[in-house]
Length: 90
Image (tube, rainbow, N blue to C red; front, side, top):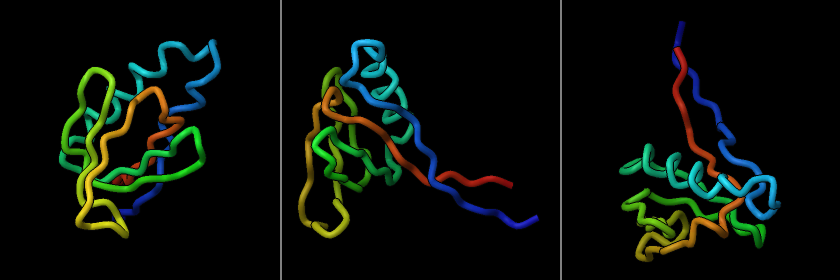
């Protein structure tokens, strides 16, 4: 079988109290993606796609932003609703 790619939604809404541990899940997912391209969907509805350069306690740094290749972004993990990335299945 050939390889296929699919988008995968990793995290749900972080703003609801029932999801208090979601910030850690978001940070964990982003840490696993270090050096890879990912999209973060912010609570504002905006999406940022870039290379995950670093993940700190409360922030993630994205480089080579899609459509803004000469710009980087530092995003607070508590403002991220979801992480979307490409995965390969066999």
